[in-house]
Length: 79
Image (cartoon, rainbow, N blue to C red):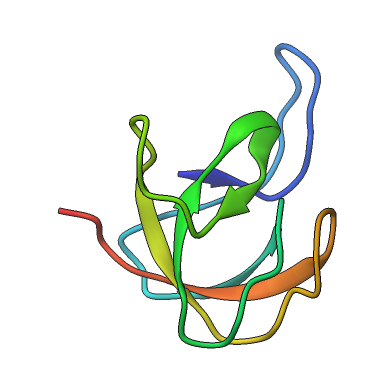
């Protein structure tokens, strides 16, 4: 699952399943182009870097112009 927002310990928040193929908003830590593979990154952000244990989350369907930019990702099952 990917959290839809930041939440405190024991707080209920919405989450998106990686199995659904949904398009969900995410926060970039770098510039990301449409069609780029998107991987998990530090502090809840995503990037195009696949190393260091990062998990493939999906493909960008909108552009992120840089760090802290909100954009949309088509979630894909990483398995």
